[in-house]
Image 1 (cartoon, rainbow, N blue to C red):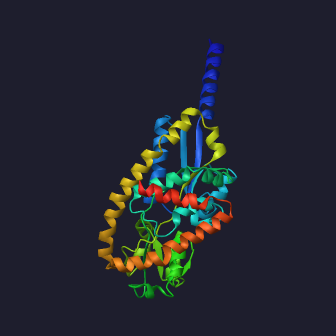
Image 2 (image 1 turned 180 degrees about the horizontal axis):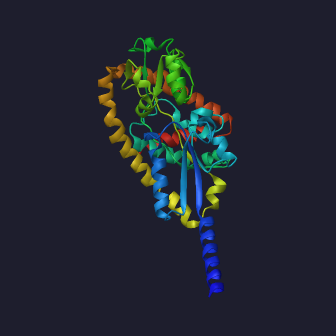
Image 3 (image 1 turned 45 degrees about the vertical axis):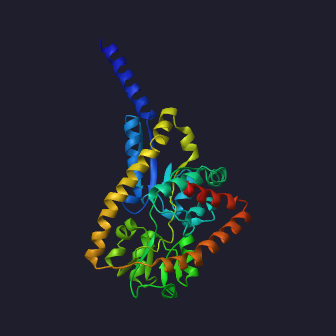
Length: 334
């Protein structure tokens, strides 16, 4: 009996070991702190765990695995399995998706941002572009149009932007340059320090980031409807890690994208924007609204020239740049 029980115990332990070994655990690299910008990642981890009965889990690290500007590099070498990054951090590494950061594209809702992002992510040229880094695009991090919050004199005309130092990246930075501003591309985590030290007088962010990174603690004004554009910050996975998943795990992951994005949009529209208006009022922030004629001036100044330059430069890279740009416009038209 003792011998039999020992064999049974060994068998039970062996089964438990095999079961534990079969579990899949992914490390996910994001940055800052949990906020609207990461809610779809958090929801994805929750859904995947639920659908696999805890056999596929995600450990989400806020800055513990990599710098935000190095997340794509980490994905490429398999340092972690999933990550978030922003295209403007390293446009040369992901030129295809920078089309989504061009200024004044006409995107007005988070749903439209999701639609144009998905269209670009699915294009063969984009898949090949990110494939150079062993990365597969999983889902966007849809953000509303950026606007500026700052200190000092508020810019009420294009002329007022001349000499204004601003934290802005990608197409927004180019648009600001054409308006006479002086953009710099400090990371989001460095933005508040840049204002405090006088490196910049204004920050181009979406509302959640203005709140999360402490900009509204010092801001005196905010451009409510300039809407020069936004940044594109996808969630990517290491392609080898994706291919190594079982069929059920892959289905749990890919099948959770739309639900995670829907949760994100609902959270942003209700939780984040629900706090935004009261915060502006509480802090006594001057809200700047531009009349239609002035907004048209901005668009005429920046939209066409920046897009034309982007198309020319990326055609030279071998990308079907005009095709990618047209895809964005056509998707918006639908």
